[in-house]
Length: 179
Image (cartoon, rainbow, N blue to C red; front, side, top):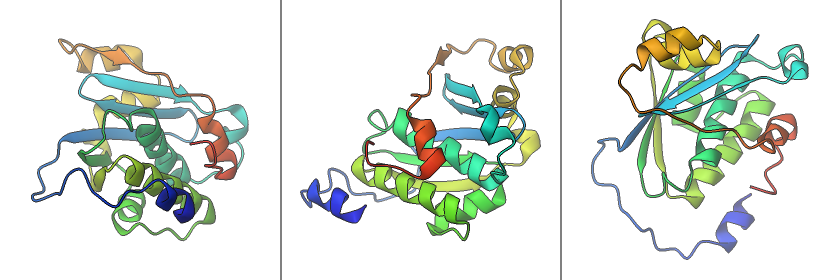
């Protein structure tokens, strides 16, 4: 991973972070029996897990972290040179993002992909816990509760994004060769 990153690094950051005001705040949620939901200022993405993921023994930490992979892969270019705060309702995932460490092997693979994508796009990131009861929009998306979602976003110009199908491979094997 590092060799791949260092081959493309010119050593000059485009932006130096001086304060901790966040340019972007993402809200994410994952439900083991259904799917994930992501929301950022009117932009949203949701997908249902493949059937073999629903019953394949993946931990909720893995599923929650996988949604963050989607953020940095799907919106990496527009987030370039930004400070991004991930609002997650899973304390373990918040700690994994902030410490850049994980004990679970599968999540560690995802963490490597996450960090590499953030480095490539010069994304300064952090995570904060948001209680599940305050994570309404992402929760509605992850559960495919469309009436609730549209009720919570009344008056907001919404734009849906689709997750690139090849990202499922990252979750299947931790493969990041093509990212």
